[in-house]
Image (cartoon, rainbow, N blue to C red; front, side, top):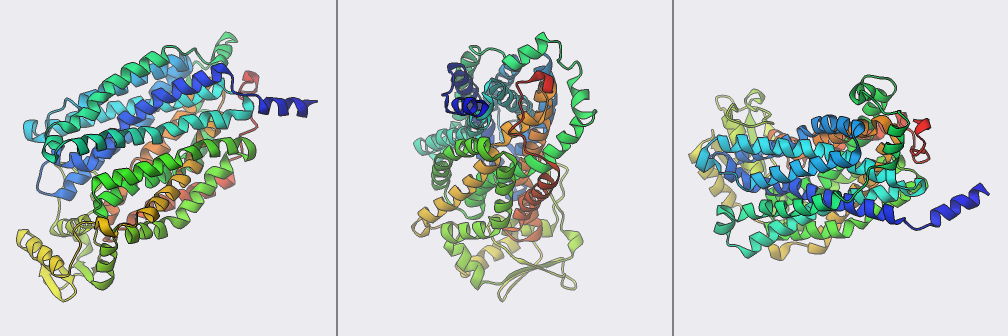
Length: 544
């Protein structure tokens, strides 16, 4: 009889309330991700707007550092808003977060550039990014918890997977609006003021999102818990200082969200930056290819969310991390082959080396007025900015740095040496940009689609997994912190860290070691120490 009842429940359609909760939560979250990813998409462009000229790689690193600042602050947003969500309620908390996000994004659209107000511009920009990060830190946990607590047990993975599509759809919306502005406007118009339009649009989206979310009701599980007096009076203490919940917070981070975060950001943002910056593909083609892969891949969030209701969440997440780690090197090498075969041919026929003392090379992660760039740093930055890999050799006696391009030798680094290097590259038929006529569009799209499949495997089931891992009274707080450290720190730091590693090591693929190592750690820890959660009944407050 129980089996028959379960079968009826599984075939029952979504209730009206479930549909309303999913739609309202998802629409608002799409717009919040759109706001957050505007800067991510424009980070290379902002390098010239908000940071001093003279060193392109330093400016790019500064732009990526500002991009990363929004991610680094996210766990603190998770703590602040997670605590409020567990004390006051889910609905009003993520109503506040979307207001903060929308106003901060609109503020970026009003910000003067470095040329107008100097270092005050990047300081204000970082402040606004921190506000965005705080808001997003409170948004995701609230939306995921809210949808999960409104969902029937047998389709919790399916229902929460709709929330998982919102990050990708928000990214697509950002690409669409930015791409439309850049196509409609001249390069000069967009550089002068047109880049502000996507940020101004956010104020319209903010009003729409607030209107939708005001129609929502509080989570029934939360209301039941409060009515029974079983809520936590100190969610932070209960989440992070009491066993065994603090153990599960740590395991959720290392054994699930860290790997999920780097796979997500490698497949979407690092692929975008790699094609645009390293492979020198024009922005419009890059946006179209990335956007097409997002549209093709998005339904698979739902598929893997649904599948996790059948076979479990954890095994899908860990399998996605494992496959990604094993295949990233060949896939990114294939991306070079199909996007810019001229660059691949140049590398295969040309021997390039940089000889220097290792102590003269520095790992420049966070770049600012305090940063010191040696001759070696500047020379290696220039080469990696061109998408060129090179071999690092021991220092030549009496020379700070020696660059060899086949038989051409360049001693030292400065304006004259940079000019010599450019002439040497030109003589060797170095392709300064990807040739559109030689891009293999179907194969490029296939590789980007494969990246998106990895993203959907690790990200589709993660919300349901985290919700089920923690009890109702501290769920918002407990799930938000490991999620935002995993995605905000491990994932959000990926473009910055990978770019710094590439510049240090001289190999355009070397930055991939970062997501590969993190993914493999997650596979090992998750397999050994975490258990499946899909059969846990979160509707039973007593169980918590």
